[in-house]
Length: 125
Image (cartoon, rainbow, N blue to C red; front, side):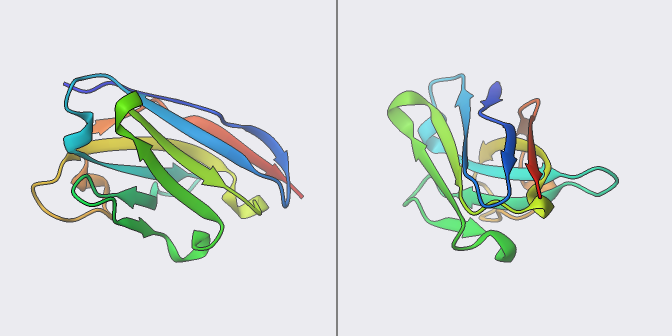
């Protein structure tokens, strides 16, 4: 069982930056693929970014490429999402997700069994 706890959300002006963190419990964090998803009011939860456990390969939603960076520190059991040049359309609850990488797929909700409680990110215009 893995428990995930996100932090770092908040209110920021358009063009600003935030860094989200996700601390995972358990001794096998380094063997999990990790991802960030977000859900805006009235919308479905969508993939934002993911990182492989094998070689650190990263994957991004097209609209965040070049603005967001996902990274992990296996020694600290922590996943990060550095978000720069934030836009009002980035406003959402951001969720951290984890799972063993049996499928090699990273983009879908069903690719992950473990989820955090979410952290709110609000970008004002």
